[in-house]
Image 1 (cartoon, protein in one colour):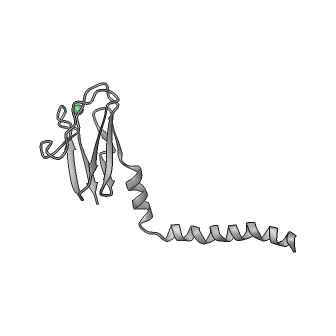
Image 2 (cartoon, rainbow, N blue to C red; image 1 turned 45 degrees about the vertical axis):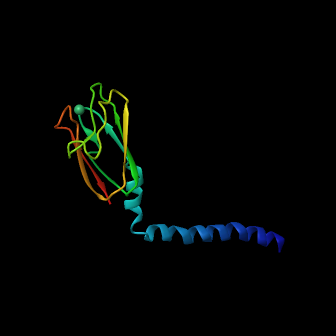
Image 3 (cartoon, rainbow, N blue to C red; image 1 turned 60 degrees about the vertical axis):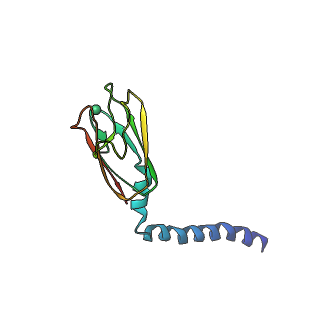
Amino acid sequence: MKFNNRRALPLAAAALLALNLPAYAADADAPQQVAAVQAPAVTIDNFAFAPALVVVAPGTKVTWTNKDEEPHTVTSADGGKTFKSDALDTDDKFSFTFDKPGTYKYFCSIHPHMIGTIVVK
Ligand SMILES: [Cu+2]
């Protein structure tokens, strides 16, 4: 009987795992939430923001890092009223926490053709 009980434990654990997996898969919101958590870093490289579009949940801090040899800024499209970085040198970072839902377009004030969008929802 002792022998049988020992063997039953791993089986019970496996059964619990099997029960948990479908619960994850059935959560339709899960992929969106994962994307929101994984996306809060924007790289500035080769005169472009990448990814140019980032979707985050309210309260998320987004961090930009300039990987170019050229200085860039991160400036909200409302003329920098919402957020505005200093000129970022190579490897400099700028962060902004997006508390309110909305679509936030931004650009580099030095190279205005460089544009990006943060969607908060
Ligand atoms: Cu720039």
